[in-house]
Length: 82
Image 1 (spheres, rainbow, N blue to C red):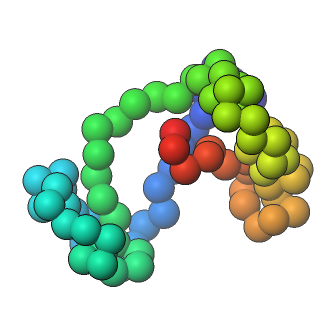
Image 2: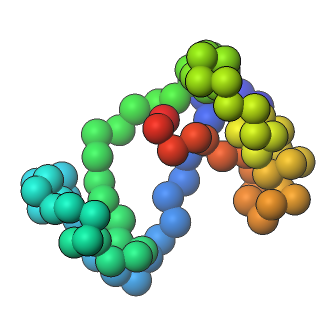
């Protein structure tokens, strides 16, 4: 794996919300599948390792592509807080 994880969003039939549109919404205001745009940030491999070490998250789907694939993901995934 390279220096940074490649984050690809899934496309939805529902329109994406801009930051200003979703800014004042609460959880009940979102429909499943709606995309919400936020500021972009590239997450490096070191960021993931540091987060997992500090949070004590040891789920293999965050650390191993093969484990993530066994759970139906194309490759390992990021923990939601990242």
